[in-house]
Length: 210
Image: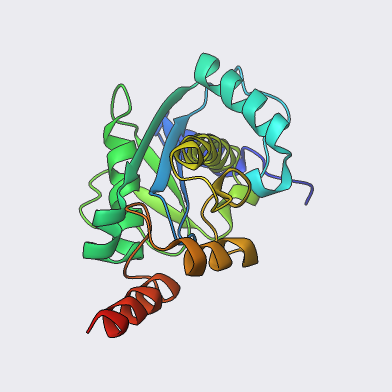
């Protein structure tokens, strides 16, 4: 198959659920920054061309599609903070961000298409999981584009405040240069302390100071 389509959405519409929200998150793997989710309800009569898994698009193309989606679709963006990630764990924090994004839509959708293996707890709207959904469903692909565009922009802003970690390029993911900066510059308030590379450095500091 050549990219996502509207098959899952059409099936839900035919089953009596006219407003379908695609839901996806980005940022489970980074050592720094929030996890971000988006919920997008596409207009079946005005779907932007070129929607695809955000990882298969260039940053410039993602930004252009995100701007278009904000104009022609219902879009909600939400995140879970580093503190929430460290308190809840990354899976539960990802689901919290998704739940917030769904709740932020102008009105509740009739059906949810959620990327991944699990439906977040306390989801009251009928929902289905779609594994690798950003490559199958146009609505999930749209959500992946919006979430990644927003989070990348947020990490570029944080990079201005905390230079040296390369967040403007690596978006907080554990690249070699980011790991080296963590060793050389230390841990910032935006690092996830529950993640092993960050935790290990904090443990080293503790041993040195004891």
